[in-house]
Image 1 (cartoon, rainbow, N blue to C red):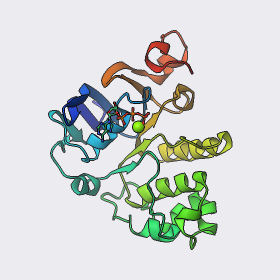
Image 2 (cartoon, protein in one colour):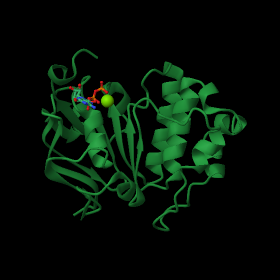
Image 3 (cartoon, protein in one colour):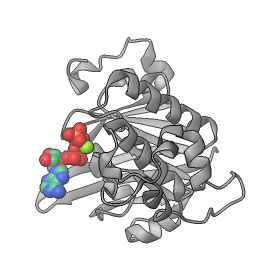
Image 4 (cartoon, rainbow, N blue to C red):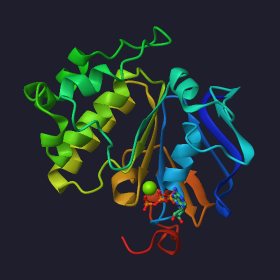
Length: 239
Ligand SMILES: Nc1ncnc2c1ncn2[C@@H]1O[C@H](COP(=O)(O)OP(=O)(O)OP(=O)(O)O)[C@@H](O)[C@H]1O
Ligand SMILES: [Mg+2]
């Protein structure tokens, strides 16, 4: 059986009394990309939060490369190789571009891939290199997104979770960010790409999961959904 990088099994998650994820299960294969789709409020970010330990599930389990991580705190999950590019970027605005990268650096846990360093991040994002001594607050939205991705890579993750990286960006910048994500996938990283628009993920992802009101509505290969015969409008609205 192919190795699973990240597995959520029957995860139940709550904010207070509000039952936000209901028996959510999905599997991200090693070196694959899973596109996680759903309307506003469907529970996509909550799936990311439970995957990195920011929210403890009240039921179900989470495994990383076959090992349980369900009850681990965020710093231990991060140390095991999961990095999140959060929705809204959340870079440190009062630090420089370079400082944002340095504070996130972690040693790689295997020799499979060349480690990410400030130099390799700057060669992937030359625009960040040109601005390395600028305060992050002064970057454009697209540059901030690139910095958020670069910062996650500095943790030398095995699993990269990206929560709506295209949000609020002009189409040309979205295309640039997507080209970068494609390169990361080709490098063998296991990736969850959260988006609202299927257009952005159908071409690039291997597998698709659609959440609807905190429940899994669709789990299918991207190839199967690309042909357009499955009715997705009921889960995603107009797109
Ligand atoms: N910190 C919180 N406290 C209480 N409720 C929350 C909290 N964060 C999210 N929720 C609620 O949980 C549900 C799922 O939210 P979540 O942020 O996971 O959705 P999402 O699919 O990421 O949406 P979006 O596309 O708008 O980012 C929503 O009903 C939301 O209002
Ligand atoms: Mg969200």
